[in-house]
Length: 333
Image 1: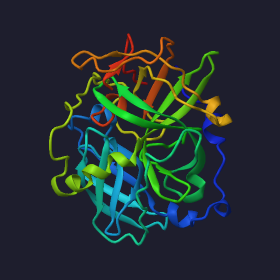
Image 2 (image 1 turned 120 degrees about the vertical axis):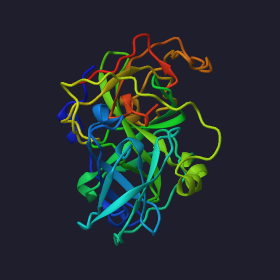
Image 3 (image 1 turned 90 degrees about the horizontal axis):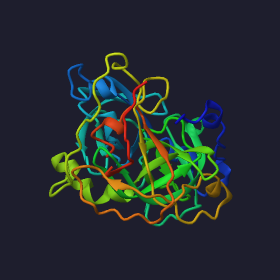
């Protein structure tokens, strides 16, 4: 399936600071740019590239940043840039393959505020939110929560209740999902392309809920991973393609982007008009080889969805699905 057009990606409404009870500009100052350099012989280099770029969010006054794992997997160097133009080195603190979250520590003072962790379980479908990347108001858009449901990718990655927002942010990798109180509700992971009943296509972002970080935050800071039993480690399933391997900017569209097909469950209630426009129909799914048959279809109606990561998740250890459609693929462009 095709990706959202440039016009669709560039038209979202920007938030107006005067409409919020918190200091929107100060909150957006917590969203930073991340750039990582990966060795050419790294396991993920041929799939995710050797140069990756995206976003992160400062969540502690000591310079701790949360981001999406595929930006920093196997990184040998990391650089963090703030909205004030300050660039400092960083290092990987931890990476949780089960959720996809990663932590990065700034090695020098950044002089930027931290963002408080909110309660992603409290938001409901049709709530109006903000998705923001590095760059202040120019990189922030108003968005609607259109679904809270299970997400499963055929590379053995499962989220019991992922967040889906529309319209999608054009540079979604590591972007912040911000609530009406200015707190962090999730981190951007994927761009999904949906096909509705009438065949129309629309885009959305899959967001990892911040509540999934809270139980493992201390483990990631202390051990670099969650301490205890975990789901099976995802494996790379894409064959290296010399024609498309190389460097790219994760979370941006110009470089080769892996894609895969997936099916999804019902969106749930979509009372808001914008939510109805982007609603995902109910579907049936089946488990991928090697995984347990634990997923029950909630409807007999099938819909198709193309999921695009920031040059990462569909083939990376960071973005996982227990289920897959009848003919899952990982295409390279």
